Each structure stands twice: as structure tokens, then as C-alpha cells.
Image 1 (cartoon, rainbow, N blue to C red):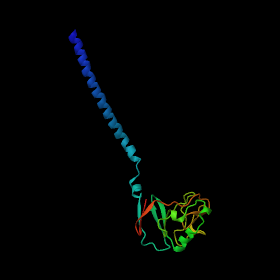
Image 2: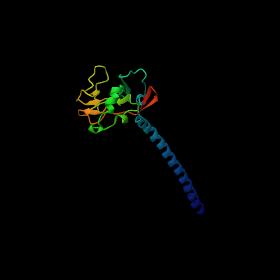
Image 3: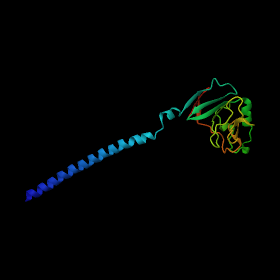
Length: 184
């Protein structure tokens, strides 16, 4: 009888060890299966390759003449680059900032006074303002005019008239050379 009790105790002890091993193995395999199932969903939340390709845009400004405006695409949005004349710079700097709806000095909107870089999307309802092409209506301030609801921006992209609540957005950019910028 003593031998029988010893076998049960040793058999039970051996059975618990196998059971623990099987539970741990099944749990590990289940966790790997769940991770393998969920991974494609998690990976689909990452930006697409075409979006990542547009995350930064480099622009050569050398061919842009004084007074000329250029439009480039960045993150699917138009970015207006204006090679401003001395008269446009002076007009932007001479504005009384306290008279503006969205007060911002011209010097806070540019890295070099002769180059203005702004996102060309009206801050009212997302229309594309006119003013990039020769002959476009630029409004009384010489900047941009949004034909959708009549918002008028000055030569610094600041809202001067109309329903737009804010200035045209200045995207993150830096000069990588004297005539090259990197947007984004």
C-alpha cells in the first residue's frame, strides 16, 4: 500500500509537469497565431508608400525669376512659392499687425524675405486661391484671392478680407542650399 501511494504521488507530480509544459506551449503557439493574424491589420495602419514618398519635397529655386510664383505638390496639397519683389516685401513688412485678423509679422512667416512658402489651400473651406498665374486676380493686396467665398490674402499670405479665419499655412521647410528648399 505504501508503494501504491508513492506511485500516485510521483505520477501526479510527473503529470503536473507535463500539463504545465503543454499549457505553456499551447499559450505560446496561440500568442504567435494571434500576432500573425493581427500583424497585417496593424501594418495597414501605416502610411502608404506613395504618401511617404511625398512626405518631403525638394525644390530647386534657381530657375524661379524675381516676381515669379511656382506651385509644387507636397502631401497632396499645392504649395505656393513666391519669389517676392522688393515692393512686395516692403508691402508685407509695412502692415500694421494689430489690424490683422490673424496677427503675424511677415518676418515670422519667411526664412528669407525674398522667398515666401505657403500651403495654397484657403483656410475657410479648402479651396485653391487664385494668384499663382500671370493674369490671375490677386485682390487689392497683391497676394491671393479665393474665388469660392471671396477671401483675400496679402503678399505674405495673411488674411485681409473675407470669411477665412486664419492666414495661409506656412509648411515646415528649410533651405538646404542658397536656391534649394526641402519642404516637410
